[in-house]
Each structure stands twice: as C-alpha cells, then as structure tokens.
Image 1 (tube, rainbow, N blue to C red):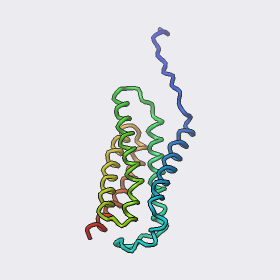
Image 2: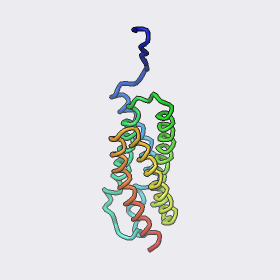
Image 3: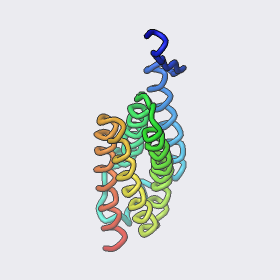
Image 4: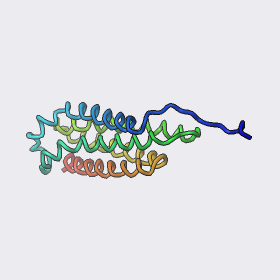
Length: 168
C-alpha cells in the first residue's frame, strides 16, 4: 500500500522571493516604460484634457496599477497547478497578463503626446484585456481576481475619461 502513494516534488521559490520578484519586476519595468513616455514633462502642459486632474494623481496612477498587476500575478503563481486544464488556464492567464502589462505601460505615451483617439483606443484595449485577465485569474485564485477587479475598475474609469476627451 505504501508503494501506491505518489509524491510530487517541485522546486519553487519561497513565497517572499516570489512576491518580491513579481511585484518589483512588474513595477520596475512598467514604471520605466510609462515614465519614459513623458509624463513628468507633459503633465504641466495638459491643458487639452477636458478637466484637469491633480498632478500628484497622474504621477501616482501608474505605480498603483502596476502594483495591482504584480500582486495579482503573485497570487496566481503561488497556486499549484497539476491538471492539463489548469495548465492551459495558467498559460492563457500569462498571455492576457503580458498583453495587459504592455498596453498599460504604453497608454500614457498617447495621452501625453496629445493623441486623444489613440489614447482612447489603447484604454479600450487595456480595459478589454483586463476583463479577460480578471476572469482567468478568478479561475485560479479568488484573491487574484479581486485584485484584478480593482484594476479593472480603475482602467475602466480612465477609459471613460479618455473617451470623453476624444469625442467631446
């Protein structure tokens, strides 16, 4: 009877190391791309926007979004995956998460280079990707889904604001 027991041994990062890698890499790379788009220099010249958002909020929004993305990724990666279906869901989650990461990082470029329709299109793509990522994350971890729900709400509000700017 003892011979029929199967033990899965996997080498995994510790929880703290995985958390630090997920969050710090996401925030570091994301902020580098976002802040290189010209947020710091162009925020003072944002008179074309429909109504002025406080500068501190504009500067604080990308780190908040990337922290949410990093935490959600951590919550998904810490879950064990053993079935083929779960591996497929995790693969699609990575695909959606990566595309969402790129879309979130490059959206400020269009906003601060005075391209309202392009900014709205990018925000719409980001919102659509966040819906898909959120649903896939709910299948793996309720916590990751909740974190991505908050991310989705913020991105949807940004999309509505940019839509008003583009079509007003």
